[in-house]
Length: 89
Picture 1 (cartoon, rainbow, N blue to C red):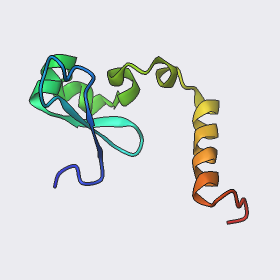
Picture 2 (spheres, rainbow, N blue to C red; picture 1 turned 60 degrees about the horizontal axis):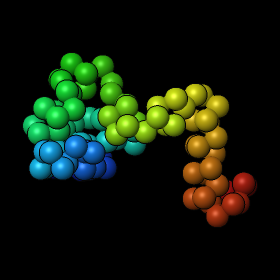
Picture 3 (cartoon, one colour; picture 1 turned 180 degrees about the vertical axis):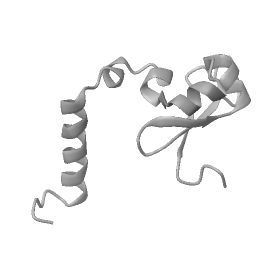
């Protein structure tokens, strides 16, 4: 499987385009898209090669404006959740 480690998401244009799926990696970058998603969202091979933020495609303005402090806070929150709040783990 080409995108076995990616999250497969239904693009927000699914009402107009059946099967509009995008593959998102662990860094929240779009790494692939079905033909219908590419057409509906204007995704090109060049934009995928440059790095395309999933927040930009999915229309999540809060995540699109995320700065370094927010990103660091998110990483720490996920690490704390994984260890059950144990900071020494």
